[in-house]
Image (cartoon, rainbow, N blue to C red; front, side, top):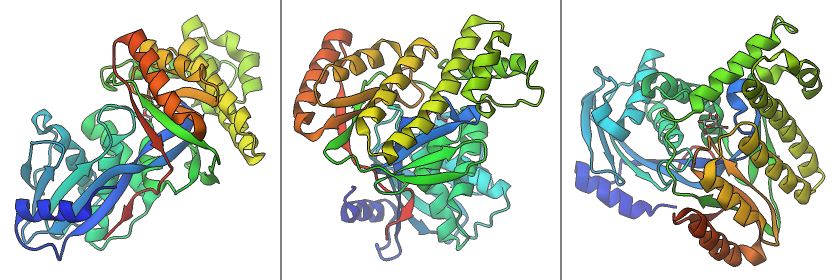
Length: 390
Ligand code: GLA
């Protein structure tokens, strides 16, 4: 967790005044435990909020300007609330700008401007939702500071819209939802079509979640993410021959899909759809085995998820596969898989606490041997969604 006194000092150095009126907010990053590439197909996901994320310090201003600064980036800005437009040159500042734009579009009254200082602890481009974290903390803080009602499900929707339309990344709802609605020691079972969700206790006892960062950056916009999305839409279009009302793959049971998958003309598209429908089923099985306290079975489902993302959905790549393979070779690892969009980014493994040190050194070594890249590891706990700290 960030050092708040230090951050307040930095805030006063930047913006003057005293620290008495500074409000402090925090939104986490997220890790998805299982249910990958199912959100935009109207299926289930099972993510959890991390304990680290983005801290935002805020103080209202007398005018209608938005001052933006970050401890992570040199770039700062002073913008008028009346002229919020996407500008590539504004780099990270487009995330808060997108949120302000969406709030104003929805008719939210921002009566003053704000001085804002962001402090991010999530490695950028690692697939742990640093952008969703900035978006959600901004929306939450601006609404609270303007005395408006705050609904974290609405905030997730608004943040996703901003990412889709203002930033131009066609992501689903999972990241923003997890960051907005997470709870300490719980994972979120979310049905992405209806946004019905429940918090499921996740206390794996002697086992810890260990995130492995491949340090292979994954660019969502440039990646094959959008191609996967349109392949899923193609599968739906083909399956409409049997289900005229079908709009999302998540509306089919596994049995219905298997009985009709021959209707999907293209073999690659069929594999993509097979992954989605089986992955949704794996999420539901995960809830059952976790309720029964069977962590080993959950680990197997994590492994199955990765293998399907590798073989059917083809979004893993050499780096994630090498890291997962090294992780699984260690006794005391119940399961290991990629998490997030894929094409680089992070893995998540369920590791017995007694072997964590060995895990980090051996997986690190094998990973470097296989790829030439250096890995980073974070032993993590599940934290809360967005909240006001001070
Ligand atoms: C990214 C997107 C999410 C989701 C995952 C894959 O993290 O932002 O909406 O689609 O990829 O599960």
